[in-house]
Image (tube, rainbow, N blue to C red; front, side, top):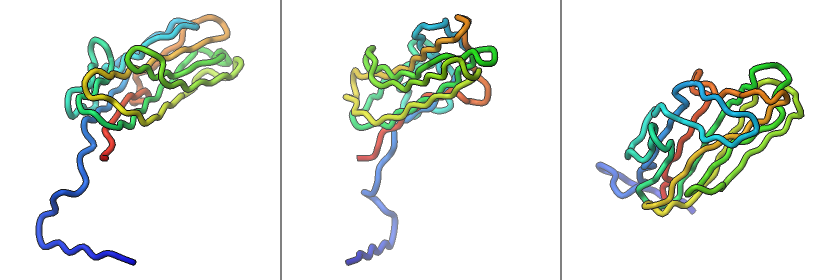
Length: 162
């Protein structure tokens, strides 16, 4: 109940490529209006194998190859003062509609909270697109910030080898 593979040269026909793939981060601090849903502007591309991510206008991933994709994002909301963070979420939109949500409620405990979102989805390779939004509610009604420091806020995806 075993197998032996003998290779006397270059291997071909094995595996595949995890592309298209991209990773982007927040290029400059982004201020969020309290208790409003806001699109996150991941404006700094770390890599983009097939130019499927728009870092300047729509801040969206539009895969140009049909298949299954692992999609992930993270944000760090900073409510600007201690014990001011009430609740918040990171939201994945597909084709302009809410598709996945990760929510956290703290009841005014703390200042900064990190949220992550991970999902596998099937894209059609022609018209499907994905965007990240956030919602933050502070106790005092003040604004919160998505910081560009140390790549804490990233959005990425890659095609799963099928």
